[in-house]
Length: 378
Image (cartoon, rainbow, N blue to C red; front, side):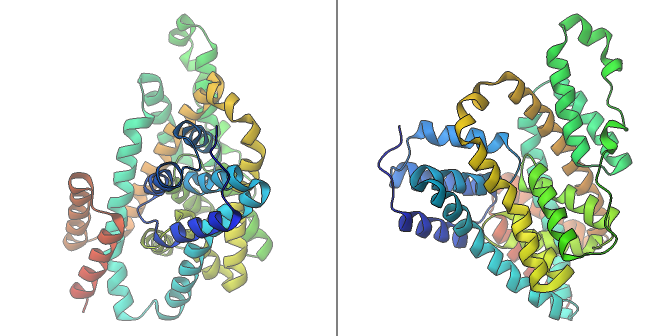
């Protein structure tokens, strides 16, 4: 059972503080929440916290933000849903908005160019490290490896995102459904088809307010696995299909998402501002986070079933390996755009070493990259 309920003001203050101080990505955010609500405040039992975490990983959207929403709900009901998530998101969104304004106004000054020169290789290393860590968890055996490999090939060939994730999940369910003998004999009959992965909404040609909201709402409704998977969706929708951004602008947006606290999904705030100023930032932010609020509200009563369902778990296995494949493709493409000389390559390698062997916080790595870029491009 949950412990005594917390006052609404305590929920708001906790997640506002976490929103300003939670650096390091979703895993770090969740660890900080566990320390606060289980160990220190005793709002939840450890078992209840793990139930919520399992549910957050089974629904699309940013898992750490959804944990904030779930915790708010357990303490303050429907008001807690709104307050817990909003207070966690708002600090990062406001900081990102300020950085977007600065980027738009000063982005071509030599000092800013130097900062971005040093930061981009560091971001590549951070993403690569996330791919490595997630891969060790997601690829549980030969089946997941084969589904992930098929997703990798199709994603690289077609640039599809949503359909790659859905197709991989369906493949895993089909694999579960057939007998062990049929698995070996009829794998080719269940082979992943590019047609299956080609379902995607028609692109809008201009970044109107309505289209900005819909694009980010769609992304928020289908992104599984990690905030880093967001990169694959952003590149496919905004760079490859709609041509609203360049690869360089996308990488700059990712760098801003990394250097700010709170959810990585506030990258949407930065992009929305680049596309349509303050209204675009507001619509992109609301669009990408709104599905998480709706899904948490709808899934609360279903948490026990989700944790016990073999089908739901198997589908998620497929989604996770496909997400890993998408991340791998995008990491390679962005690396080609940002690592173009010996110095930038050295920065990427050094960052990877510091991440993998010394577990240095990504915030300090990006600060280091920014400083190196300023020195090298003076």
